[in-house]
Image 1 (cartoon, rainbow, N blue to C red):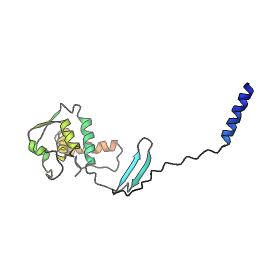
Image 2: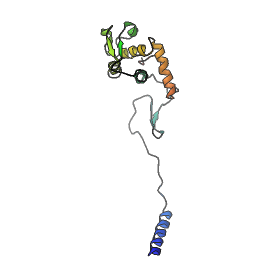
Image 3: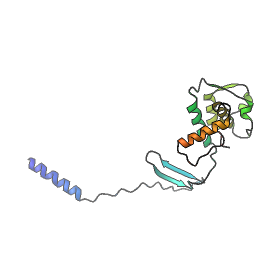
Image 4: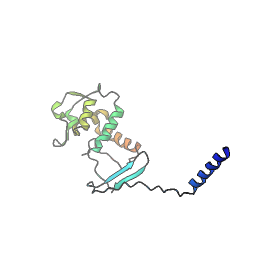
Length: 170
């Protein structure tokens, strides 16, 4: 009985080895629509596979993506979002275009807001005023010092073609 089972096993093994293997093709991530953006880069960060690119090396203004870096730097610098209070100053808001997206901090000069509230104002209405107030706070009174922190963080993240000049992206 053992010989029969051994013979069957060897026979199945030989037959399976003689069947040509199906070739595995790379996945096709073909985009079948017109991409409206001037530049796009989509990479699977788990595998490193480039899924789509269009003008990937084209220099583009970062706009509100800058606020994501502002959030990261603030989040890494402030240990307690809810209990850390920041005073709104006219100095922090000077030079801000009032027509730009804001959370309305100009009406609250002298008031204190939690970092959590300012982060909400930064991300939800894309508040440029919140970006400036947070940058001044984390940069110990200097927006330029905060921007240096942003650029250092970009370097740590290997964003080699990224350079920030302010915390809001305008």
